[in-house]
Image (cartoon, rainbow, N blue to C red; front, side, top):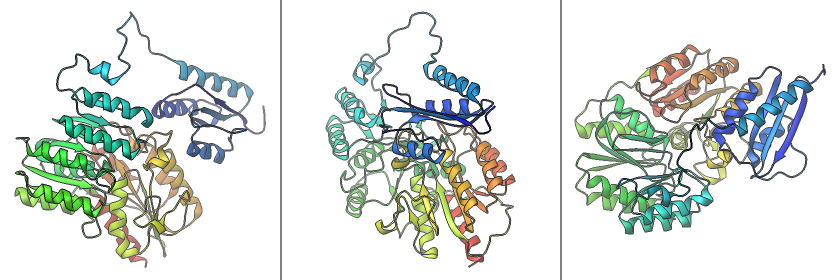
Length: 488
């Protein structure tokens, strides 16, 4: 037997699997006896950097459309068996039994004969999403584009075509929606009710819908419009169409608009149009003046005459915060990361980020930078060829371990987002990481009791590991700031 692990690194062309399947394969192979490290992923720059950090960089140039298979094992026999297991996992097909109808290969073919109206959901690589969306719009169907990587000029063209056709484009990069009680993408199990949500934000919409549910108020529809819709380039095209749709919906009595910080001129235009609608519209678009989604929900509850509840939480049991501690926010949700920075910046000063509030605070690729830092691990640049961190926590777990090893005094602030499509048991991997790191930790746990993961079950597990847990991200942020302020 070798004294040190043996390694295998190969690149394969003409092979594609989605990032969730590749993550599953990596986990399956990593659980084999004698296997020490595994990377089975598309050879994107981020995944190559991950492989290099594990000592598994490929020889020669790799291309993003290639598959990298890299692993180490105890000896040659275990290595060969593991590589064979990768091959078997990638080529496995479920037993199809008797011959079945050949599935449709395009959106247009799939909609042919479908009940009207049908919503087309598109989740293909960005370069191919535009043609499929155009096909659906031409067939008179609304579209949810889960795909990212769609050029902004194509997004504008699709949304203009949809407006002319009297349908709605949700997306691109629309991860969350609820239509007539049906949850799509990363959505939570919330009760139905009178509040319609228009969201240029995924996790922000989840935060709002879950807080409404906790207050006993339900959602009629949650219409995601894509994170760029309120930018200057897109001009709120889908937001205006979504507001019009909710205004015409008899089940919707109030509307809340949820967004990352929008382009001011676009926000002003949307507000002007909203004033002319019959349904009352309240804005929860984040800004320096309005940095708090929870406060927006509480204001809406006041509009409805509903008492604001005590938002669920669990006390933390972590050790005392060390002197000079900085804030380290490791987020899977971009809107929640923005909310944290908007709330924390007045108290802490400059906060560096890969999605900064000001360009000069950009981290670039230095996710391990010292000082106050908030990282959005769900940003498109960190999810190319990888599953979203709400599904695959690998990068964030590595960042937590790296922070602990650095010795920098810090308060760790995390979001954990539950619901359909998310990790079925995020506490199972996060709790061991938090115990190992030994850092004072605060968690914003976004979800409901009815979610598959169950809010209270996850909260109890995280609190037992020492984390202070809050249903409100704003409350979690302020608690973390109080911990840091006590040591200032």
